[in-house]
Length: 70
Image (cartoon, rainbow, N blue to C red):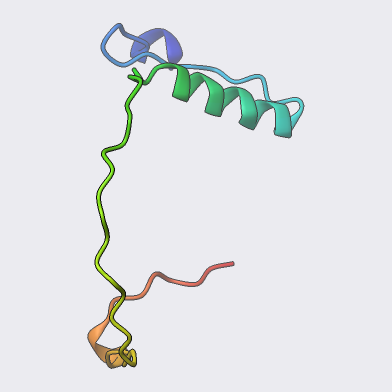
């Protein structure tokens, strides 16, 4: 499968997963390494004062829920 589907446009990456914790950390590090980051300073702005109102939850039938599997 790898020989026929590993191309420059869509490469396969294999993670050595003998140690699951290290494998996950290595995978996350590799993914983050591929994202270009720029040093950005946040723009400062003033927030208006908070409006204190009582929250009313919408009806459960009007919402979409993710299935609870675990």
